Length: 311
Image 1 (cartoon, rainbow, N blue to C red):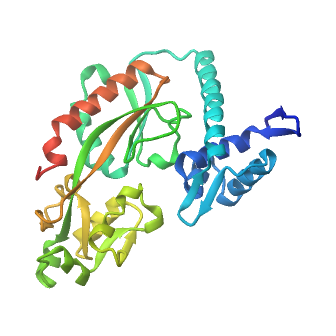
Image 2: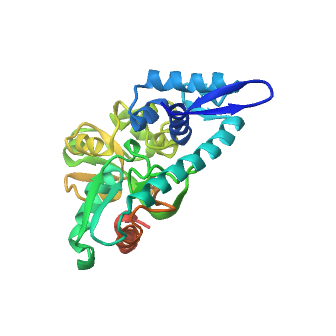
């Protein structure tokens, strides 16, 4: 256990670095369960660490609610300090280890599974020959690693990060549409307007496990109800739709790979979400990180029509 002793006029206390790391993980994602996975703890242990830190500091760091943990003003001040501490430790570890900045070696990428399986891996045959010596480590779940802690080198995210020493830019917008299978369409009542969706079996996200708040898009069309089949990941939603379980709002670039899917009401139901490409401001492997980032941006730019087919 690593502790830092701090003193004020009123009292002296020790800060446990593990408690600070736990606090920072929650501050970054705002959800106890997701933060617990990142730091390798169960959520009850993580909750106790946050409570212990608040007791030591004698100030609330979060406002708890059923929707998550909202950081307080005091928590934001602490987060800024702890991020600087973490960045310094990582920089020292990186410099002391003497890693060679070259194109040869590992590069860890993390991205949503829909983007990974339906776009990125399909573009790997187009990788330039000079990048052939990069050993790609692909994690198809951005929630289980921390880019700030350099547990990954490049991240594709569905929301722009607001905390940490990170560099981000919008990679692309991607279009959503309403889909069902051809078999479902033949055996169920026709959908002639968005309101008709209410008479059908809806496939969507589990409300408290959405990738970002912006993915609560079903609410815009059916504000009074949740999905009938709630699934935590988009690929299983696609699979269920392909097998005639119901109708779903799906990314068009993923649905395009499934000939059994039919798009419904393209003029009435069409909206965009965004992917962001994110790196650490001080990458572990600067050259290969920059070259891979350039490749991904080039491929996404060239594929705009696939990501936004009706725009």
